Amino acid sequence: MGHWNRIKIAKCQILITNFLVLLLGLSMATMVVVIHFGDHFTVIGHASLERNPYETLRYWAFYVGISLAGLLSLGAALSTIATVREAHGLMAAVSSMCCQTTPAPRPQTGTRAGEE
Image 1: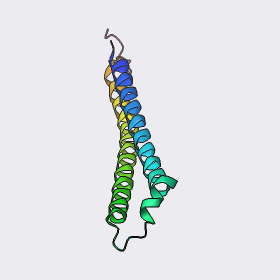
Image 2: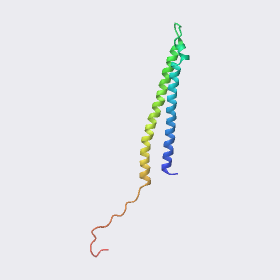
Image 3: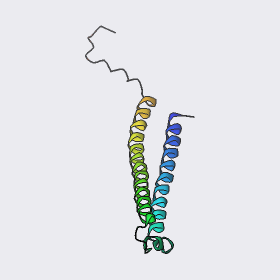
Image 4: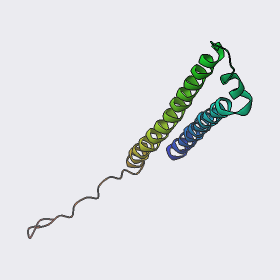
């Protein structure tokens, strides 16, 4: 297997992994928003207790979930950008190593008469 194929396979594996991590971050953010603003869970937030311990837990879970989803999405996006930029450099390095040719001999100019 040549250098080109190895680099392309590794690049595709990393990009697929980054896409799945980005999907995980977006689905986590969606789940947190649905849980926070959904009908079943807003009843807990609007309970008429004087001190509702579930309300603070609900806000804490919402902010932690959104923060983790944002970190996952940001990490996946930055990793994808870095992979694409690095792959261009690797491809250029491999192509320069594989395709090096020896320079052709220079033609002799200005030969004097009688010399061969």
